[in-house]
Length: 273
Ligand SMILES: Nc1nc2c(ncn2[C@@H]2O[C@H](COP(=O)(O)OP(=O)(O)OP(=O)(O)O)[C@@H](O)[C@H]2O)c(=O)[nH]1
Ligand SMILES: [Mg+2]
Image (tube, rainbow, N blue to C red; front, side, top):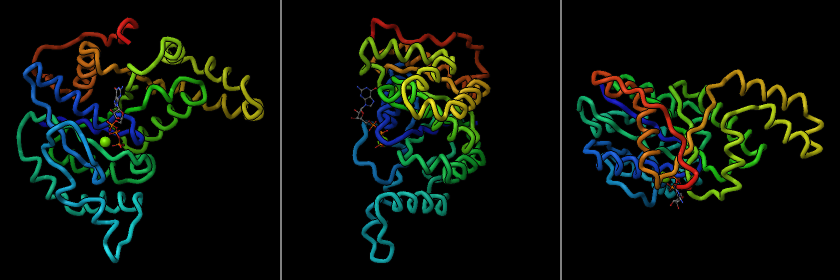
C-alpha cells in the first residue's frame, strides 16, 4: 500500500506552503513525506519535489504554442489533460515503493475539481497504483470570518467533496493571520450551528430577507452533511500540525499495522494565534 494526500484549494489558499510545512514537520520526526508538484504554472515552492509536472509540460508550452494559443486558464486545463494522457510518465516518476507517503500539490483552479473530472481521473489512477488517498481541501481562514463567506467556502468544499468522491478533510489555513476578534468570530462557526450562521446572513441584507427559504434549505443541507467540518491550522504550532497529520493518517489508514492511535484533535491554542 501507498498513501497520498491530494492537496486542493483555491488560488493562493496556501497549498504549496502546506506541502512544504508537512514535509518539514515529518522530517523532524524522522519520517519521509514526499511532495509531487502538479501545478504546471508553479513559479516557486519551498520543497524539493519528488516529481514535477513542469518537466512533462509547462503552462508556457500551452500558451506559447502557435496552434494551441491558450490563455492561462485553458492552458492549465490542457496541461492537466496532457498529464492524464501521459499517465505512464507520472507512474514512472512515482516509482514502486511500498509505504510511500506522497502529497500532490495541485493547481489552484478550482473548476478542475468542482465540476471537471480531471482530478477524479487522477484519483482513479492513484487507486490503480495502490494508493490510499484523501483530499485535503485548503481554505484561507481570512476568507471565512463572516457568515456569507463561511457559507460560500462551505459550499465550495461540499462541491469538491461530491465531485471527487474521496475521503475529505477541510483545512482552514493561515490561522496565524487572524486577529483575536476574527478568531472568535470564526470559532462561533466551527461548531456549526447553521441556523445561527444563517440568521446572521438574513438579518444583514435585503437579499438575505428575500431568499430566506433558500438560505434555510442550504442550512439544512450543511447540517445534514455534518461532514463539512473544518480543521483550523496554524502552521507555526507544531502540535497543531501533528494533530492534523494524525487525523489524516487515520483517514487514509496509514500506520494501521502499528499500534492504534486514538488521540483527539486539539484545536490550536488561542495564545499561539
Ligand atoms: N502567514 C501565513 N502565510 C501563508 C500561510 N500559508 C501560505 N501563506 C502565504 O500565502 C501565499 C500563497 O501561498 P501558497 O502556498 O503559494 O499558495 P498556493 O495555494 O500554493 O497558491 P497557488 O499555487 O498559486 O494556487 C504565500 O505568500 C505564502 O507565503 C500561513 O499559514 N501563514
Ligand atoms: Mg501552489
